[in-house]
Image (cartoon, rainbow, N blue to C red; front, side):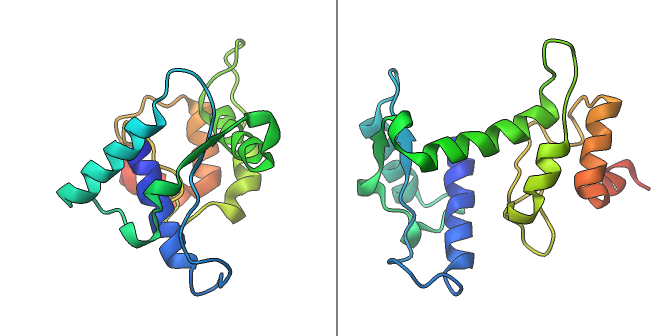
Length: 157
């Protein structure tokens, strides 16, 4: 999953560079510090991917040596990222009562990465694929509200 995130981050930085002239165009990857994750191991994983050359990652924007881990409570960007992830989770993962909430996802739509309105392959990467996901009627409604065109194509409508 992390490879997908890095891939999409690299595409986003590449695509946004003409509009955002600040900095050197590279993404600063910062993890929330937690036990059990080897940050050096992650850097080595990225180096292996880069050397194998069998990915769609746009490497010029990835600063592998700059990967960092910080305390979650001290970095507002980590807290904002959690808010976005939680908003998306609420649309797909039922709460203890079996409810999902799509309002937050809908509100985030204007800032979710897309290419020519294709959100599902760029800003949202759902696994398993939409076709294989077992969606409830409520989840399907949320997705149709978010991007009905994709589901219409899947359903053959």
